[in-house]
Image (cartoon, rainbow, N blue to C red):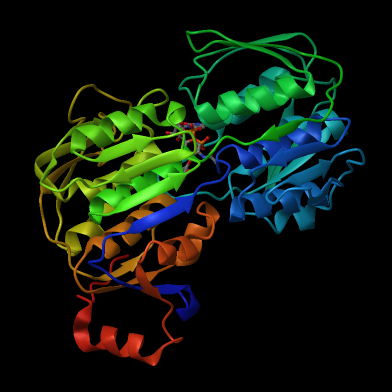
Length: 462
Ligand code: EPU
């Protein structure tokens, strides 16, 4: 169990109502910060959220001599890479296990210093999350990689040269690895089967502002013509469509009404279609999107996660909580991560009926069908949820537990809430502003007593 400061008591049964704001995307901002390393002049990044992944990258950049300071407007960072230097391996290693972003330092550090040290990676436990594509790509550019006990040591003895790469799967991180390496490599790089998520498009915009030459074809091919130097950029990060969808799902599951300031239709079209099919209502204006439960029953749906422009895997977990309230059988086929449905066992202990399958249910066969992973689900609803003791398994699963606890009758004890700070800025204040009844135990003796009296179903879920 986690320590008491990392536990949240959630008294469910109240619809979430009000307005919150999402800032720059967690899956863009840290990468745009890494891109600043490639420049010969300072960069300005706006709309930066205060989340753990940003703090980790900031720390790593500073270790490498990048000055990171606050800009003129709130949420603006100025990143000055003019004095990039080698960092102490032990200091870098202190960041081991903290995030997946350090792998993206490889290309920029090889360009700037000729060598790089990458500590053990962190990130959510939602599948094996190998990094074989990243290293295959870097070797093609001419890097040598040596695995040692404390991490990976890379060198580029003859510099980095453009090449032709075909990704075995349109991996987001590997596409970013290619972009951040190819922009300063000698010659042309052609990447096929690339990922084209909106965050990647935004990273390409950042790199183009710095002086890079990058074209994207309709068939997932990206061509990068290497240039000799890059300058700085000024950029406002695209808003976090994953966080926006999490709040939308919370509105639906709690029968609430939330205006998400900053949410953008363009990057959420697939989510919005699905939200509407389930029976959720939304209204789009220039500044954001309002999401609400219009009353009446919700509809069961068939859902398959996929790379963009498909239904994003990070939208899946929060929406599944809302599907427990839909009438009939919903089918969910997770095709991006092999183990992103494990969080449902806790929902079942709260009263949901979710059965997992190893087969590919729904439309198409995926990479996991023959490999014995529980990656499909049938959600049978509607079911009443009861408060429980919950242990957060990963970032999106964690937010889903918060939604479930808020939709449930009674009190839940949610353990490991610090993990949510990795990707959701200021989520406690946002919950409170939406009228959620949440409290940190120990700050109010009555809260502890209520839970001890058996208000919560006290189901320990690992
Ligand atoms: N893959 C490999 N080998 C590799 C890299 C990826 O087999 O070397 C596989 C993965 O195991 C997975 C698939 O390819 O099955 C897709 O992984 P991808 O590389 O696209 O994921 P990522 O870059 O590690 C980012 C986001 C994830 C998001 C995915 C998919 C960041 C920091 N993370 O991860 O976000 O789910 O793309 O869009 O950008 C989250 O926000 O909660 C989150 C997990």
